[in-house]
Length: 125
View (cartoon, rainbow, N blue to C red):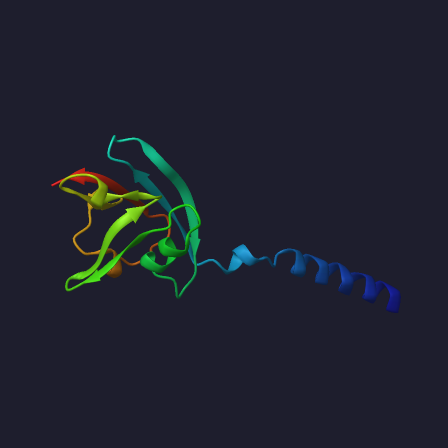
């Protein structure tokens, strides 16, 4: 009887531990798309985020995206994404779209929501 109990206990423990992995801690996933000046997609990928993450911090730390810029009076001004610097092109800026709609706030104020698609396009103004 003890062996049967021990067998079921170990079996149950195995099922519980199998379900535990680091990705289960993720609060959600966003899709990020980066389009260069020539309107070519240079990045299209899914990124997991945690409860305390911000879009700005997540993209600054991302290995391929490497978002760069500077803090201005109205918030963070994006200059570089995926090694592409907006200041290398005349009269351009990084436009942000969330689920196909132009962002009404800067990157510092965009909340992370599961399954959102966030697109950065280098465009003329």
